[in-house]
Amino acid sequence: MDALADLIKLLRPATVLLGSMSARGRWGVRVPEQPGPTFYFVTEGRCWFRTNDAEPVELEEGDYLLSAKPLSDSFLSEINAQTELSDDAFKARHTVDGEIRVGYEGSGPVTRVLGGLIQCDPANADLLIGLLPRLVHVPATEKTAARLRALVSIILEEAADSRPGREAVLCRLIEVMLIETLRREAAWAPHAGLLGGLADPQLAQALGHIHADVARGWTVGELARRVGMSRSVFARRFSETVGVAPVEYLLSWRMALAKDVLLRGRGSLEEIAETVGYKSASAFSTAFSHRVGCPPSEYALHLQAGRK
Image 1 (cartoon, helix red, strand yellow):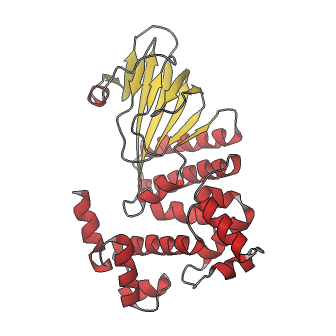
Image 2: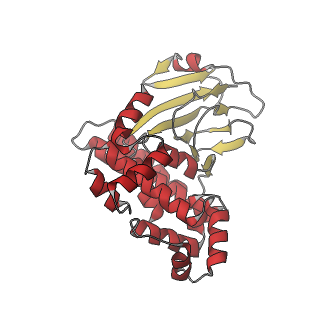
């Protein structure tokens, strides 16, 4: 089984909110704080991007960015330009054909940036935040950028349409976009967390075993044998790379699956317990309450109350 694909499916990215900005002259804007992952695509011109205290990134036409949790994402015409717009001012900015205009009209070349907020299932949205690097920059010169550009184009077309199945298509497109971005990142640079595990062939194999049979009572020794490593070396490498011990990863994934099923009201506690590897409903309820903070019978109501 594919651990990355499994996790993206569980996030159920059902909606993407799109917006665009054009700018001329000397300008700087801070994007309003967003509740979830946001992608940016430079469709024309060039600019600088800065987030928090990280080093600024120079962007050119065709570049793609994925920001895990935008809190202070800024776009600038020059590296030392000032960001002049507050959140409220940005939202109220004059728009033309749905495009926010900043800078000085008719002054210098235009820069255009398309942005999209990805809204994920609240039950496990924290999984994606934990999975993503703080920022993923895919330059236009990379093959992955061309694939992402094609996906963004289709997303735009689908979002503007009202044909039957629109939401289902958007969900699948966003899933593919996230997988394209994350598998590229796993291959290009070392990371902690699931991306780091997927970049290691033996750890990726172990993760595949866990996802293929989550109800199995996996032990560190059995997983180590399956991937041809000693128990101690496997346990150490898994913990150092993925960030948690193998059994802890298994238990966390079981709870993620259980939350997803409970939120949708599918199956009895006995059925859910069996599916995620517990011998009884009471054993599952105890484990769930300990890790999630409320009994499974109250989980959906608890989550809905927390969102009000």
